[in-house]
Length: 113
Length: 112
Image (tube, each protein chain N blue to C red):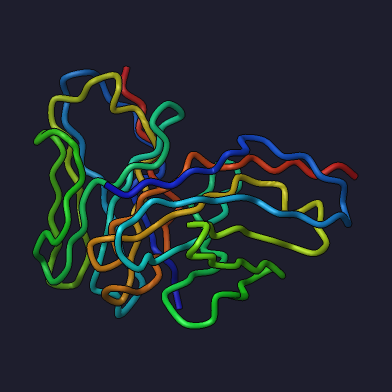
């Protein structure tokens, strides 16, 4: 069965600093990979996705992620964090043709001003 | 284009009752999936419907069921509610697969 690991439960960064959130997956076939963000009391917003092709994908709000098959990783990055980026971030892998998502446990991001 | 809408947003039920949650997908989207989010178990996939047929199913008991209508709107039903069913229930829609899923704001269900 597929699984997703987000090793960092909480991360605190200063505004303007760079950010990297880690995600490792376990999946036998070519994975469909996603990053979502959730603000308190809200649903999930899609930041970016990887299906195939270029391993560096760009998303919304200045986020990017790099797919590394050899490391089974799909880490999310942002060069300069803004206070409004404080939220919980979820990595997910899709199976069943892509629509059955398995989520990681999430990383709570705090931004210090 | 309007996003995914879910009704009601909040619900309080008593143990043993049943509940029905509704989801309207983005216009043109034919796939609707449901997820349960709890502090203890995180985000878990319930089921996916496409063209009124269940296409994928998660590991939940038979008390959890769903359906999809010809206009792609979907409902999920939970019978004989248990305290552990208290959760945020999220609906997501997509064009088909594999396409990205867009989530609604969720229905917060509290079982007392």
